[in-house]
Length: 172
Image (cartoon, rainbow, N blue to C red):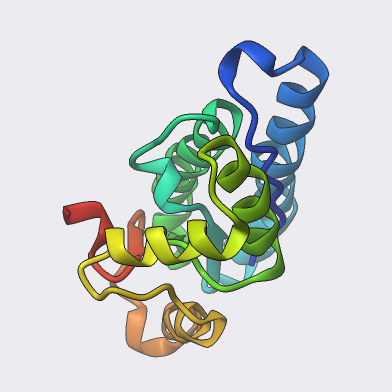
């Protein structure tokens, strides 16, 4: 699984090029390099499953997220391309696109981005929960369950997908 990621939460006009590049390097290039190293193994064994961690930000966006959204959209495109290359070898490649999940990273984002909106970190998290049809944020284990499914034999005919695990946020 390729899952490293950072989020800086800066408005577009305040994003220095080195911050842009660092986000792309970690969030997209890191996934690319992981896939590149693993692909020959999967091709040789004619099976396997690559699971890339994207984000709902790869399918939608909001202010102060240009570099993050661009990197996570790139992960979805990379996932589809690698899936096309590995499908003839019996390997699957999918992306998981979590919504706001109660992790340390999201809590840090809440403090920084909440301040831009005049909210406390907790206030921002509560507002994000209300944006979601399920009226709550995800717990990490809920994302892990989808990842476990994609790694299992039950998902052998599922490839090239970017699966939203966001409590319905993307549809609201």
